[in-house]
Length: 195
Figure 1 (cartoon, rainbow, N blue to C red):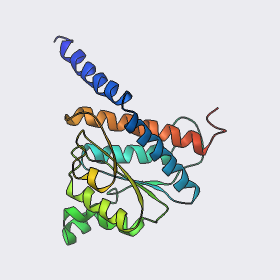
Figure 2: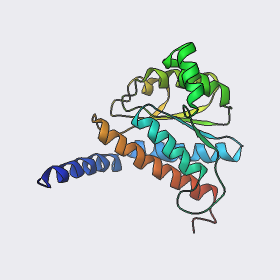
Figure 3: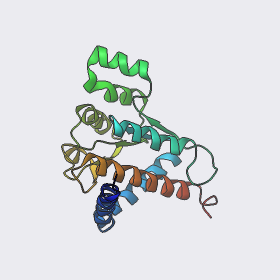
Figure 4: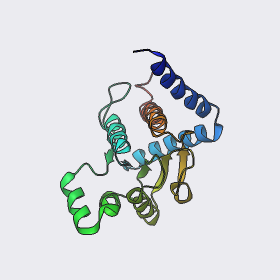
């Protein structure tokens, strides 16, 4: 098999990231989100993630980076990914419908000092949008991750839009931005550890 297809995919991924690199608005939004997260943690809040499919995996991945460690050993940082309690998720889905699985859990665990980071490549996932509405109702700072258009999410909260319409490229941007977020938050919250 030729390596050209592999190179083409890597080049496509790099091209999207280079567009993002030049997008000062998106970069400022990442910085803003990092500062919101640090402020939340200092007030005893937590960082809450949610998403479906690959975005659900990203939500769990990023939450784990905060709770465990990222670039250096340090105390755990409070973070959860909605939907990881499979019994609650199936009960809510059965009793209230799948559109409510994140919203109901968020309503149960969220505090005003928390930060909510919904992830949706389309920006249109009904259960993610329902959770954003709960976050708004509870006055929880919310910054979403979406694809190029932002979808309906963009009208509901601050939104960092990966500059692509391809799911794989969007997800690659999201995990990269998530790692950057983890690194910034970790270094700001534990300045002595980042030296």
